[in-house]
Image (cartoon, rainbow over all chains, first blue to last red; front, side, top):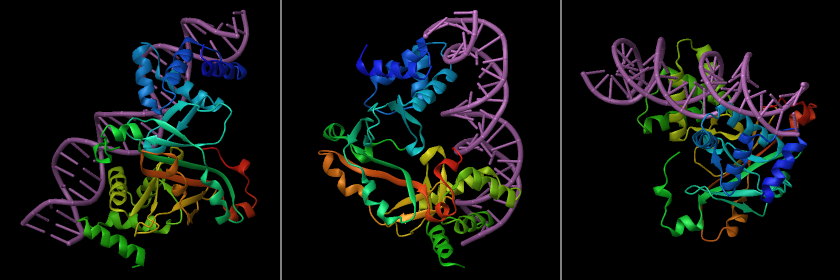
Length: 152
Length: 152
DNA sequence: TTCGGTGCAAAGGGTTTGCAACCTG
DNA sequence: CAGGTTGCAAACCCTTTGCACCGAA
């Protein structure tokens, strides 16, 4: 079993979550696609296609549980709910650059927070979101342009 | 007519959009709440309550049209679609600090973009999202704590 | 007068629920 | 075995559509 899968399974165990066939399949899908966000509808469709009989219930509830225990990162930017394997199970803080063509996620090594809190005296800044969008080097080199992207 | 309303009406005219009773009422609601994001469901409920007979159709389509012509800012952070009057009709770039208790929006005067693009050679960064969340000075002073917030 | 806008009601699409049967640990 | 988990199907909620009527410019 690959290292990230082992970690995920350990997290399940620690949280009294059983490792069912369905959860294992879900984990493998997420692991395979760990470099990208995948929208939940796509995950659901894929799982139900690959494993006939699997219910919406199972896919949605498990993704939510995985998110709660830190196996999955969830993201609702741009009106779609998307998920991906947690980049870093140790919860090291980072941000993402997301290619709008292929969905590839690049981790960024800097956090903009420090520059802003000084502007909000007396406030408690408890959270923030920060994401960059665009075209990754590969897609750009392949001739994809901003104009050629499908809208929404 | 207040200045922001005049501006909004001018934008409508410029885009060949008629100023109907319904649109006027929507604009007034948005203007009244221009310091906060309001989620779309709440806007819809309020308008239909205040103006019996108004349809979902009208509320949703108009909010979308307002957004397209720049009268309204839309935001889907945190799984809810929210709208507010455009802070700045001249589209000056800025970011927000959003109080999670009262919803007040504070505009920030700095953009973190410049610090990040250097990390993505060969990529086209075409957009970004950045928002801070927390408790504004008033709510904090009033004794609201992070723990006392209602979860989503 | 003329299009654009509206209300109504129904359809749509994504997500959640209830519950009996099932299967990990 | 026991309690967590699943499949099924229906319910739910938010949003969009279709269409005949209405009204701002």
